[in-house]
Amino acid sequence: MIVDVNAYLGHFAFRRLRHNTAASLLALMDSKRIDKAVVSSASAITYRNAQAGNEEMAEEVRGHSDRLIPFAVINPFYAGWQDDLKACHEDFGMAGLRLYPKWHNYSLSSPCCRELVSAAAERGLVISIPIRVEDNRERSWLLNVPDVPLEEIVELVKAHPKARFILLNGIGYTGCPLGRKDNGLPSNYAMELSRLSAVLANELGQLITNLGAERVMFGTGMPFNYPDPALVKLEVLDASEADKEKIRSQNAMTWLRL
Amino acid sequence: MAIPQITSGPPAPQPGVSRRTLLKGSAATVVAMGAAALPSACAAIEQPVHGTSSGPLRKGKVIDCHAHLTHRSRATWEADDRKLIEAADKLGIDQLCCSTLTPHRPATADGFRECNRWTADGMRRFPGRVLGYCYVNPGYGREALEEVRRCVGDRGFIGIKLYNEYTCTEPVVFPIVELATELGVPILHHASHSHYFVEDQPRMSDGGHLAELARRYAEAMLICAHISGGGDWEWTIKALRHAPNVLLDTSGSVTDEGTVEMAAAVVGVDRLLFGCDSSMTAGVGKIRGANLSAQDKEKILSENMMKLLRRRKP
Image (tube, rainbow over all chains, first blue to last red; front, side, top):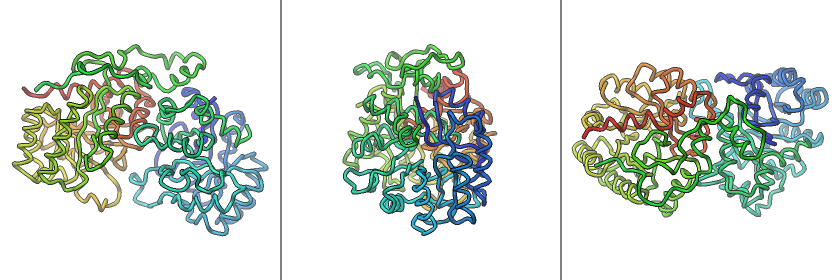
């Protein structure tokens, strides 16, 4: 069983994505033997009204709930986000959120964001935060969106010990408290592996040593990314089969109550 | 001097990811996990297995066209170099075309000569696994040319590495290109195209510059470095469409889906070279994930690079 906690549907404003419909993503997953994927709307990253993207995605994944697990993109600075959160959870059955603080121009420490995180935690929703969407060097001339600083994540997980966070598309965790052993932080966050090294610096191995395999989850970033690099990491990772199984699926299934 | 062979030293360890899985795609992973049989579309294509090669530049090996040994100002350089080879073993990469770059840039003549001595030493420490690029700063004129002649002629280096000391269209670079053409060796040129000014690399070359250089020197063999670590890869691929003597290196940390397929469609698969530039799983995963035929992947993984290396003049 392989569960991908980092997948998307829909269009991205700055690059054509393939495999971005439910049918084509499922076909790609089949070809790679990926069983389930957590998906959110790529369009909602740049839509002003992110809820329109959530609605598109809810329609797209209908009939595929056995394999595609929808997450909502919510902007806590946009009018009506409380209504959107309620609709995504109660009407669309979404199991979590994806937050884009830099794309949506707010701080993770802002009262609005904190209110959203509390509301999501109250509902038992998992909150995932992509540290980046794409490599900043290839950005459009129209904008410059920085990565989410890991220091801001540190403060967020500390401030919301009852919330559960999955950090996506991140790197450099071992260079900050998030990836260090005995860091004094609540164990309410997990890190997805798509950008982590499994050889040379081997940050993936360091994280397993420092925090345990329970804190790492498999993810690809498809269809933004090829899924294969993440799969290759699992193949070459120097870890026990039991630990690999946790990363491959067990951790995500526990967190998502699958 | 002959190109190093994979004949000396102990047999390489069995790779974690064999050449077969490189070619057939990641569904192989699951077979290894004990899952159901592969669909026919993913069937493996029999190829020589890594570690069994016995001659130079034989068909079927995997060559990383863009790799680096560690500068020895870094205390862990020896262990880092060993880790590079271990990673190549795990990933089924037979040979790595390496340069050593100095962190003290722009490189002085002493600086690049020191780097090249260390690259030569790496070729001796990892015989048959490490092939050397001679790194020079073209601004040193005669000294740079002498260093290229020494490295390629006497030390068996396979090509030249140019970084960002000069944009490749500046006349100071031309004598290096002319010498590379005379010797019949490729130039791997650092390149990137971003839609903003990269302040710390003001003389960065991009695909457009390389295309211009290629028009000036139609016999030169130029390699545009890391299309997956060089900014807007769609721009770079399009900029190089009409520059047949520029090959594109697929290395870099970016794993954007569709990169390799677009490059193959626009410039042709014969102009693509597999590379990692230290992003090892990214480099391997991109080729494995690309929706191309096994024959096309063979070209990217080794045949195209071998063709370049065979053009070396005696």
